Image (cartoon, rainbow, N blue to C red; front, side):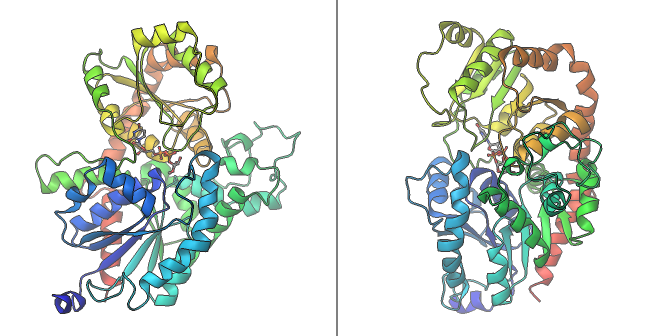
Length: 482
Ligand code: UDX
C-alpha cells in the first residue's frame, strides 16, 4: 500500500489557513473544490480550530467521500485559554511565526508527517497570504506555492498601496486630518476612498503598530509566490483586479467560493448536502422562527466571528432595532459583548419578545437565503458580504475592523447594495437606516442588488470568469506536479 501511494503521480496540495473562522471556512470550500477535480488535499488546521470543527460540524464525514483528502494539525503557538478574537487576534501573528513556522518546516522535511511515504508527496502549497513565512519554507523544499487572501481585491489593493500613502504623508493619520478627505494614493479608488475607509489598521497613530506592520509587510511579500488566489469575481472588482495584476500578474479570481462550490456540487449530484464549517454550534431553531415570518420582513443582524461589542454600542443597536418596529434575528456570539451584559432596559426586552429572535450562532448562508430575510445588518466581513450578494439581500454596514472599513464603502458608495453606517452607533440613526433599508429607500436598492446577484451567479456558472479561473488554477496545480 505504502509503495503504491508514494509512487503515485497525483497532484497533492497542502492547504494552510490562518487559524480563524473566516479564513478556515472559505479555505475548506477551496479544498472541496480541488477534491472534486481529483486533486489530493491535506488541510492543515491549528489544533484548537480542528477540535472545534470536529465538535460542531460533520466535516470529517462530509469529506470522507474524497479518498485523497485528509486533515493534519499543528499548534498555533498560543496557550489554550487565549481569546483569539477582537484585538487579541494579532497575537496569533507573532506566535505563528515563532512557534508554528519551524514545526511546519519539519512536517515537510523527509520523514516529517507530510513527507513520509504514506501519501504522495506534496506537489504544491496554498497558504493563507497573511502567513508569508510559508513562502520561505516552500521555496526551500522546491515546492510551488500559491497564496490565498480572504479579503476583497479592493482591500488587498489598499493594503498594497500603504507604502505610497506613507510616502505621500497620508499615513499616519494626523489628529487634525479630516477623516472624510478623499485619497489619491490608492489608484482606481480616488473618487470614493476616504481616510475613514482605509483598513482599520491604518488608523494607528504609530506606524510601528503590530497589526499595521503585519498587513503591510505580508502584502508586499505576495509577489514572491507563484500566484495569488482571491475570493472575488471580475464583475464585482474589475478595477482593483486590474491594478493588482500590474504587480502580481498570476491572479486567480475564483469567488464567490461558496457559490462556486454549490454550483460544482450540483453538477455532480442532484441535491448536495448542506455543509457547515462553523466553529460554534449552529442554532437551527431560528429557521423555524423565520418560516413563520412574512417575506422580506426580517432584518438579520450578525457581526461575524471576531468582532466585540461594548455595552454602550449593544444598547444603541438594540434600541435602534426595537424602535424600528421591524422583526429581527440577531446573532450574539458567546463572549462577544465586553463588560456587563446585565440590567438590560425593560423596553428592549419587551420589544425583543414581540419582534426579535436571538441565537448564539446561526446557519448564516441558509438564513440569508430564507425568503423572510429582507436585510442584513453586518460588520462587512468579506465572507458575509459575498454571501449577502449571492442571496440578493441588501446590507446595512457597521464595520468593526481590518478589511471591513473598505468593504462597507464599496457596498454603500460604489455597488449601491446598501448603506454604510461606519463609525456611527446611535439609536435614532440605526432606527432610521433600518426603516430606509426595509421600506423607505428599498426601491433604490432592488435593481443593483438583483443585478449583482445575477453577475455573481454567472461568474461561477460554466464558462463564467470565476469558473474559468478556478479551472486554470486546477490545471496549474496539476502541471506543477510534472
Ligand atoms: C474575518 C474578516 O472580517 C473577513 O473580512 C476576512 O475576509 C476573514 O476574516 P469574520 O470577521 O469572521 O472574518 O467575517 P466574515 O468574513 O463575514 O466571516 C464570517 C463567516 O461566519 C461567514 O462565512 C458566515 O456565514 C459565518 N457565520 C457568521 C455563521 O455561519 N453564523 C453566524 O452566526 C455568523
